[in-house]
Image (cartoon, rainbow, N blue to C red; front, top):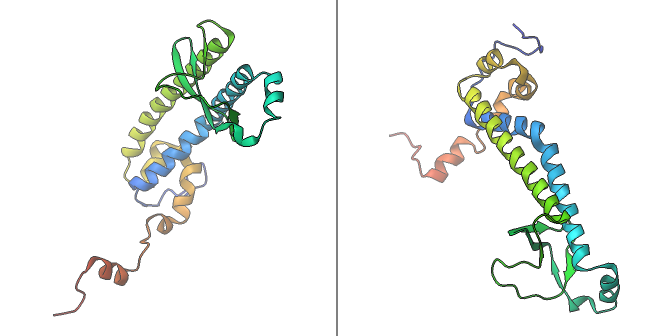
Length: 197
């Protein structure tokens, strides 16, 4: 017997914790990864703008004339936006900064509340917070459904829309649960006596 997706419904492959977790991760990544990546890009763009505020073009030009080891190199900058301090990652490329000995919690630069940069930061943070809440809500609901089923057959009956995420476990279920060490080797590792009395 097959379902509308053309998958075998007769399979009694157990829905193990490992399979549940993998299906859940794939579902969440499909639903939220593009938005998460966009928020990360927005934060990196903001970080680049902040760096330009810290070191305008004229300053960067003067910096370029100094020895490269004259500056510290950082992958992130601690910035204060209207009283809220955040560590902004500078993307894939570290940036040169003047050596500043900052006290714990202090920032390399501060923006007053309501300034364009502070408002941009708040907007990105709000989007990130909303996305995190939506992902957590979806995760709890999806996990509840996954944990209510003990086999892939049951899961497909309850939630047929997840068929594309289940197919590989129906086709090669042994690969999902196969032991990684032969039994004889495992017995040796665990010190189990395999000699007959």
